[in-house]
Image (tube, rainbow, N blue to C red; front, side, top):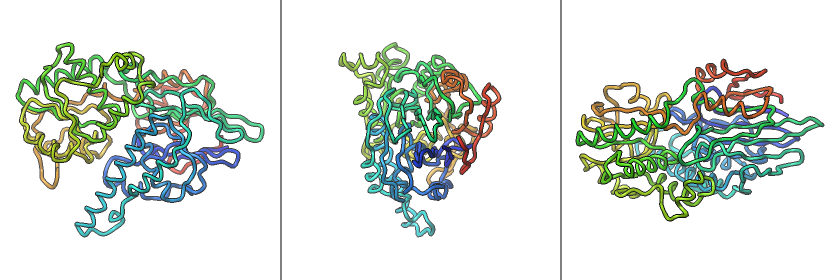
Length: 459
């Protein structure tokens, strides 16, 4: 009975953890490494295990850094079952298909430019993503045990991070010994408008938990919402646009909810045009409406009463590329939400190219920005940035509002861990080294581990 770590070990992304018990190999998540183009080689590298040997994959949620290498796993020989919640299945299909398209596009671009090396071939393609989708089997329901193999049972618990996200409790028995191992997945903060609070089981021996914000607490949500409204209103008063680099899953839907609430309460101009310029975010919003059962009861009641909590008076969905390009002709009065949230790709880079140099505009960052990403470079105060081969001066007002994070902060993480019972051992993952160390210093647990990639431990 042992565990090994093959990603998100002393780093935030690339979730991939392997449990071995009773002759079975169980993979929890199989995510992409994110943060910059130089990580292509990390994503293309060997997994550290043979994909053909994996019996089942348990997926915590649909973010790319948790599901993004599933098509590669399948491409290299995995043919077992993938288990996730119903909402995660729908969102993961969307994420993996989009990722495959981007890999194909990048490979074509390298080929056009005559560049040599592995980038000329996509990491995986659309067929690989479809093959991965075909392997999704049983749907996990929260708090309903799933018998995987003799002596091995999995139970999913609401993690409150994004729609359908889960912490996974594994009950493992081998040679007369029993261990209860809990994978936190990514945890959400307390009291969010769309999702329920994360609540773990309370009988755990070993915890593998994320520490993305283990070294800090978020600003209060109420203060963050007010700052958001103030930033939008200030740009509107100056006659500029608001550009919001937006994560397609959860953040886009939450911002639509807050914009609607602000307009209803008179905090921002009701006639302001809002553009959701992200095909993935548009599709994700439709998926949200399909899975009202895992949202907060208040939202379910709104839907049942015929009131769409994501609808706005002047909301425009821009799926087509030509419609997105037309937004660059708008000089004032618009809120443009576009991916990617870390500005590593996607349509937001075009909007930054046309608005970042305008002093009357604002760019509002409302999510995590990994080191090395364009978002982090701008947040850290760069005077100019390179976009599409051109140096663009940064004259727009830059706002960073961390209270919108879909991740639990340090206080929330401690609260969640305190509900798991009296674990004898905690493995800290999904965090930069300084965040892990700071969080570890606040814990009263007999044994704390901060594993490195490839490291294995007996359970």
